[in-house]
Length: 526
Ligand SMILES: Nc1ncnc2c1ncn2[C@@H]1O[C@H](COP(=O)(O)OP(=O)(O)O)[C@@H](O)[C@H]1O
Ligand SMILES: C=C(OP(=O)(O)O)C(=O)O
Ligand SMILES: [Mn+2]
Image 1 (spheres, rainbow, N blue to C red):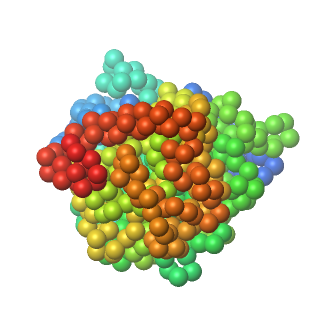
Image 2: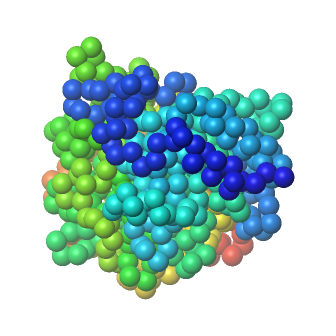
């Protein structure tokens, strides 16, 4: 019998356990241990070796009495036995116990106190602990942190490699969530994003049970208290578009929505830095300083980061505390959203750059979750791959998609929310022919949607998907609004659009008969 809490307690009380080190000491430790390098921005820079993105094929949920009847098992939520988990857990803890040092952070996930999760992160690496300290919510004092009795504990040992034959994993890498024990076990990968996304998955399991909607979205709020949400799979623009000098940032990736409004789950942001520039993304650029962790960013001998260099990965990242964005709202809590934006990076170049959705179209597109997996965030993805990622976040959803969709539908109704579909992907042809939508145009469109001006607009209906396309948006060339006009050949556009529509229909078949009415109202027949 493995006594999990006793084993964790042994690690925590070990002499060489560094508990709740402040950022400066974590930076010092990381440098002293040779884990990273200080850049001339002040940010700490680390490399993650061969895993520069998430490893979804190595992610499991323990199948036990708690999870068995609740989790939507399948390719995303792969079951693993209690026995495999227990054996591996004991091995990993023993492995860490033999290390000279371990790093421990206590904190929270969820800015709403009623549903906040108390957590502890035990790391082999100092820079990982700095990442955890940056990305989760930091308790106000060290004393408060030490008093935390965690609901969930992450145990991360990147240099521990599993032997699939012996350990029952699929490879040397594993991310295993035990909902019953409140433990997340990570080994074989140094990609720091696994930690934050595993806690997000846990919140996506726990919040709906408490009647709270959980969402893979960014959020910001304007002077008039108008809240906007941006849903989207990785790389579609959640972080970029939510950082806006004219609006307060609530958070860039994970939120809950309860009877009072929305709240951030995290205490930091995790921005993509590929091709980052001060001109295009000033808020993010200036957030890269002491206290920020740069992951897989190329740095020259003088310590200057080169954000255009993708030699290690497309998925280069910066993790910084929320308050490094000037106008961040902390505690990150706000009222009910007025506008919801679904971000899609359409690699076919077929969907309009912005369209207004009816309530049922919104439900249809939320369940479909059409977008592309962009290069880098998941292992093995090197060019945009069209994908249907239900709720724009299927890798992180333990429950059935309709649980989240029903909750969102009720909230949209209740709060009379305007919903837009925004294509931040390709225009003028598919990937390889056309080019990615210009960020400044996307920003203009999004601003007009949020300000409410677009609702008053004239719309034309697109013939393929029945989407309402505004006929004009100030600051945006008219000819790009209807994608059909941007292709060299209209016939080629029609052909591609037809193909995309068919894949929408095919994909929607996975939902039950109950969802058919959504498809029909969404402008499709199943
Ligand atoms: N039209 C556009 N809209 C949004 N982002 C764009 C656009 N064109 C290029 N990008 C780039 O795409 C990336 C979006 O990444 P990010 O905002 O981090 O996505 P997410 O937070 O959804 O994972 C950024 O590197 C951004 O500069
Ligand atoms: C960190 C990730 O997501 P995002 O790009 O949405 O922040 C991820 O998917 O690993
Ligand atoms: Mn992001």
